[in-house]
Image (cartoon, rainbow, N blue to C red; front, side, top):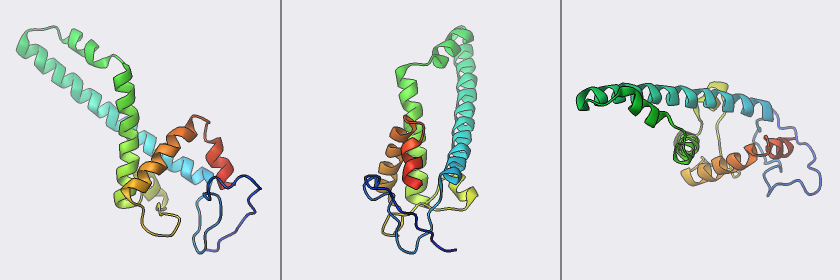
Length: 151
């Protein structure tokens, strides 16, 4: 494979992120979006499995304590700020740990690419945390910032 360098318009360097680096082949927007889609499905499956386990535990607790199972299930199924924040942190932790320790999340691994630092070295946990946190901000703008940086 060869590296095709595209000129970066003035003022769109995004802190050097969009500047081509020697010898490395970057991955475009759509393969990255595909990997995120796979990772989102993984996150949803894990969340659903956790919810099912929570309902089973609630039924057992209700049976042992003589409470109404529906009341306990309603209590654990209510969306609060805490559950929303924990969901975001779960996704952030998944991306950070998989990219920081293994170099790729499941979606990236399936599509055959690895996260590395700009200097070509392996991604660290701190670099993965910064990268994943930047993604949370980028998704507020529907990926436009990342799309512009990659084009």
